[in-house]
Image (cartoon, rainbow, N blue to C red; front, side, top):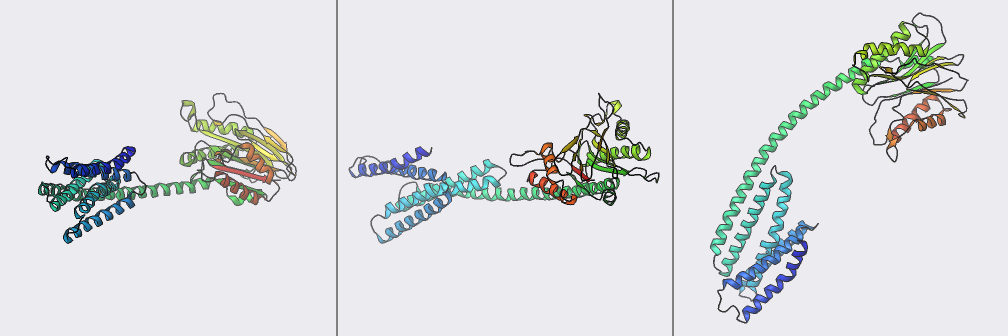
Length: 460
């Protein structure tokens, strides 16, 4: 269509010149005046319509519309002035000016109006019909004025029909505008009501979750107790949502019986899910851990995990088919902070020890089974290790290593976490926590945190 409009723009002036030339030499002498006149008007109309179509697809369409409107109006006014002064060329100027207004300015004007209303209107078809009717009414009306000015036939008919169509389109726009305003106001009122209701419900849910966080925090051991047991240590705890499926746990042996002991239990657990479901699971699993290790005073880490698994399975009724996918992964240490003896048992979650000086990293592997229902369940295994002064023990869930980020949006992975911990093991523990936090945020960038994060570091 663009190429066709260019051809018409080139060919129409030649057609107009040809009609004028043939008229001057008497070719239309025996024909009605309306025939050469009609041919000339059609040629002009084709010229300006193609011109308008060409600019409809121009990035400077609005500017072209204004320029064409001003040019058409100025030429028409000059033609009228020439007519009053009886100067030659008045008729040609008037015809050209009116045709520019009708077939160049008007199509661009109403195309712009349609595009503007199409995005605002509830019905694209109504906007299109009204734009076309307004365009036709304007063209017929201005052509009728031109015919009247030139004393050509059918002038009154064209002016009357154009005025009627233009008036009908104006009334249609007015009615549509009022209807759209009413409908949009109703939609806005409904939207405001929905937003108010949504905000109220969101506040209720957020308040409930915040209260759930208080309950969950009550199950987590106080940080001051951790700092008392481990003068050199940190806990990085960063839930994905307000509440967490991860939790940390520690307990001093003999505390319930008020007996002196140098053994301390330390654990990091990752329950199924995150947010509210994960928080519920964390309360269930933490209660089970407290019941086994604190109330029943079972000491060996692998026995604690065996008994905790049985209790969690019974609580979730997993033997009956429900809660089969629910449970937790955990790394559990029994740690003598005077002798350096370390006992470890884990369900999926390993632990690592960075030797003093950072030259060696020892991985304490976990059993490939969860604390929960497992068809091929077997007793958990105990791993023992002798820590030396300056060694650093790290426990963590998979949330840190599984975070997507970096330049390619990939997972951080366990190997990179291990290298990071190895590189910072000799700096103060609170600085390690800050560096881990900064590294996590830099890696994540603008991506969403995908899971809860919990990392514990303790130096002998």
